Image 1 (cartoon, rainbow, N blue to C red):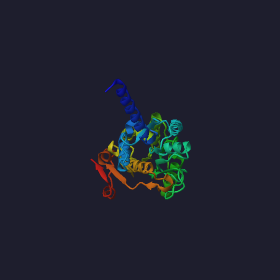
Image 2 (image 1 turned 135 degrees about the vertical axis):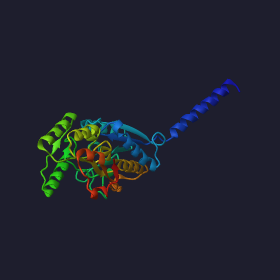
Image 3 (image 1 turned 90 degrees about the vertical axis):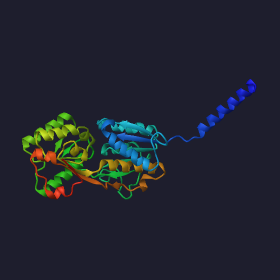
Image 4 (image 1 turned 180 degrees about the vertical axis):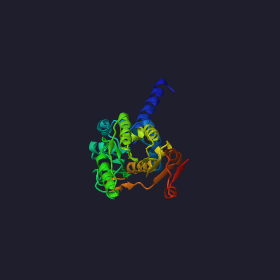
Length: 305
C-alpha cells in the first residue's frame, strides 16, 4: 500500500468517525434542583435514581444529570433554577420541598418540572391534582407543623392550619420560627420558659440538615417532639409520623423518566404520598418518662428499642 493510499484510508476513517458521532443523539439532561446539600440528601438521591432506573434511565449511560445545590440558602434557588433553564435541560427535578419547586416554576413555563412538595394546589404549583395543567407535576406530601422556617414558602399555610387544629382541640399554640442554629437554640429556650408540653416539627430541608441538633436539644430539655420524618426517630427522636421520603423521591424519579419518554406533565396526575410511617423510639420515651399508649404501639410500622 502506497503512502498516498494509506493517507486516503485514514482520511476516510476519520470522516466516517465524525459522521457517526454526528449521528449519535446527545444524552437527555435532567436538571436536579435542591434547597439543601449533597451529603444529607444522598439516601434520598439514591431513591430518586432508583425510580429513574425503573423507567429505563441510568445516569451516565443514557441520561445526564446537572446538579444544583442551594446549601440551605433558599435565596440562591432562583439563580440556580435560571442557570438550569439557560442550559436547556430536558426536565427539572425539584424534589427537595416547596422552595425548589417554586423557584423552578418561576424560572420556566415550558421545561417540564417534577416536584415533591406539600399542598401544590394551594401554593399555585398546579391547577389540580388529577389534571395539573401547565408544565409541572409530581408528588404531594401534605406537610404540617409548629416550628417553622419562615423562609419556606409554605410556612404561612403551615401556621394557619396548625392554629386551626389547635383551636379545634382547645389548645394554646405557640408558633416558633428558626432560620439558623442560634434560632433553634432560642426556640427551645422559649419552650422551656413557657413550660410547653410538646413540640411538633414539620418537614423542611433546613431542619433536616440540623437533625442532630434538634434531637439533642429535645433530649437535653426533656421536650417530647413529634417529627415528620423517620430519620429523626432513628436518630433518637421520640416519635415520627409522615410520608416515606425515600418512596416520594423514588416516585419523582419515575415521573422524570416518564417525561423523558414523552409524557406531558399536564397529563400526569400529581401523586399523593401512599406510604406513611409511624416510628416510635421506646428508649427515648423511657428517658422522658413517657408511657406510649398500647393503641399507638399497635399501629406502629417500626419500634426502636
